[in-house]
Length: 227
Length: 216
Image (cartoon, rainbow over the protein chains, first blue to last red):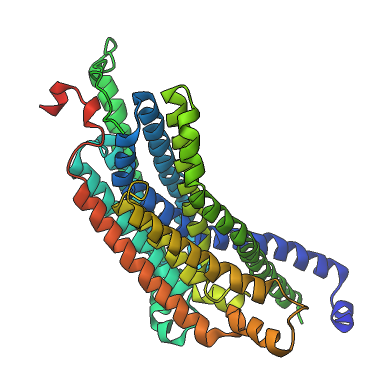
């Protein structure tokens, strides 16, 4: 080690340390985010499919106020986790990372699926329309599989020779060109979806005209079922 | 060694070191979370005992909501933290409890039971959930104490061999098969939960709030 330090000039050593800290910490941060994404995906999916449990709990609450608190907490947490997961997925739409850091090859498509699930929530009624709920569930399950399968069987299984072909096929750094094309395609789909959402919200507001009023229909009061 | 090689070596050290530090910190936190899971599950009689003391139904409802939300949230968080036990590379690189994946499987099974049955009303399911949580806590805490936290005390002899046996990185022959069993179990239960949720969702979540116009 002493010989090594003597062979390298102080400036070179400083540069090496600075480069290593910047690149190493960036690489660690992105890898950690990638490793944490399965947790977020699982949480998002669990909260989404927990609907029957949450609805069953509501029936037990004796007051509508309590039922509202329970329901709003559930919806808030469920949707916040989805949005956070999508926001973090955005990092994996950056081309430099996919080419240099081993990431799930299909990760960007998972982000698109999550965005489409959010789109269904925005344009439909996932809580009251079973058809919309199913559609959002399919997008969530598809996205989770596209992230979890390569993460578990490829990125985190490099030590298992049996899975080497799978690992090679599903890791972004092994197919940098394909990863870039998938990423570019996903970015285009996200942009198109974003444009549709923009048009849906702003277009609807414009159609209402300057005197347009929000929907003021109130739900008719009704007691919540007894405990 | 050239400056470039030194940079690469340091780069790899930062990445691998940071990852292992994070995973080990989570592994150390998990026994605390497991204890919280067990404590909240077993606190049910106390929580029920408190409810008649409230003079307002609102307070009773809020008390029950807070208990149920906290109890279930801790289970969910513990499972999310346990997902790393489903990654073979993590098990081989870090010193982790060898049965951590099975503990995660027990936790996930409890969550699925809560989804498909009413654990608060069905005594059989409450007992089953309690047993699964107890088994999961044992599967996590025992190897954690004997293998990871006994360094220096159990380096040699009988206890040394036990510590080697229950630590994932020193017993890869058992750690990897247990990991795949856990992955298969979690996958099967996950598919069942998704299918159940899809089949159950045939009506609005809160029909009492829909106006007659919407229902029509």
